[in-house]
Amino acid sequence: MATTNETQTPETTIRAELAKLEWMIPDAKRDLAKAAERLAARGIAAVKECHAMIAEEPCSMGWTEFAEQDARHANEAKAKLTALFERRQLLQYLIDEND
Image 1 (cartoon, rainbow, N blue to C red):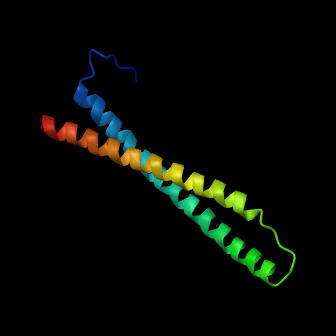
Image 2: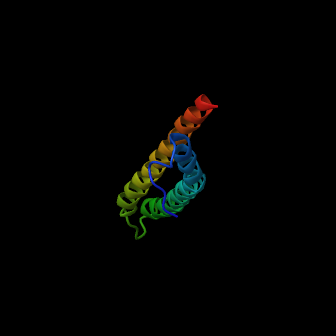
C-alpha cells in the first residue's frame, strides 16, 4: 500500500513508527538475551580452562579473545535496545502532546 506524503500526517507517521517499534523491541530483547547466554557459556568454558591450567593440564587461553567479542556483541545489543526504548519514549511523548 503506497501512500503519499500529502495523505500522511505527522501523527500517522509517528503511529506507524510506534507500530514498527512494537516488533523491533522484542527482537532487540531477544538479541540481548542471546548475547547474555553466549557470555554465560563462555564463562563456564573459561572456568573449566582455568581449572585445567591450575591443575597443569592442557588448556587454552583463547577464550579471552572470544569473551571480548561476546562482550562487544552484548554492548552493541544493549545500545540498540536502549536506542529503541528512547525512540519509543520520544514518539509516545509526541503523540501524547497532540492528544
